[in-house]
Amino acid sequence: MTGKEILHKMKAKAGFGTSAAADTGKGKSKMSKHITHGFHLMKGKSGHAMEDYLVSEFKQDKDKELGLFAIFDGHLGHDVASYLQNNLFDSILKQPDFWNDTKEAVRRAYLTTDKKILDQALVLGRGGSTAVTAILINGQKLVVANVGDSRAVICKNGKAKQLSVDHEPSKEKKDIESRGGFVSNIPGDVPRVDGQLAVARAFGDKSLKMHLSSEPDVVVEEVDEETEFLILASDGIWKVVSNQEAVDSIRQIKDAQSAAKHLIDEAIARKSKDDISCIVVKFQ
Figure 1 (spheres, rainbow, N blue to C red):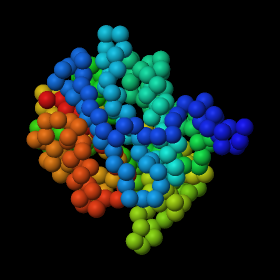
Figure 2 (figure 1 turned 90 degrees about the vertical axis):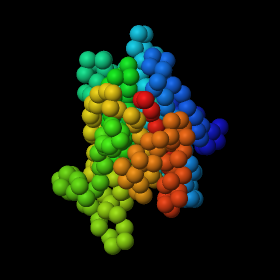
Figure 3 (figure 1 turned 90 degrees about the horizontal axis):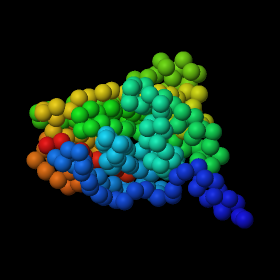
Figure 4 (figure 1 turned 60 degrees about the vertical axis):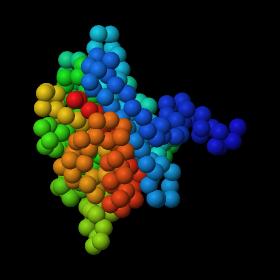
């Protein structure tokens, strides 16, 4: 067996594939027929393979329904993002206190998943991934978590509200320095951890892990009559489109899949060159 075949076998055992999800798709809730979701991905103009992965689906759990939505934006390779696509939600849902303390269950699953990724660095490589996840419980409650700069934005009565936190190195400089790292500020470039990574928190990145965090920010948002839709997207959109611009541009688009594609088209029109992935969940 060749080295490449051995590595492929190890990757399969680790529980992840080698390609991203379908480029576009849609679905709807069985419990709440008016809740729909749609997603779209677009390869950027970089020379490397597509590094964005996502999850966008509804799942039945006995008498309950869970909407599972996530964007994983890989860097230095796609293997960590692919692993997250296949494993993160499983880890969250297997937490014994998921239904009683969902916030803590999500937080713990993020940290234990990152440990598993680091333990498999020989297979998964030196890269990493950001993540933003949203779990919709019975169409009534959203639990949103993230590490990195992929973002979750909700629209309520036409107003954009950011639910995630952009983990920028400049904002977490003291924490990074307290771990022995530094934040570079080279003219013409964005701030970077140890002069390399443009986010302060991420999964993987074993060579930088001493100076990085994988601690997620987790928030709970009630879905009420004012809630119109949720956007999850990688930073390829948010680098060129503000939260309110994103909300305004798709508010009148009823089809969630078309709305997700429209946001990506808008980002490309504004010269975004990154890989871009976007999910829209419509509540009305």
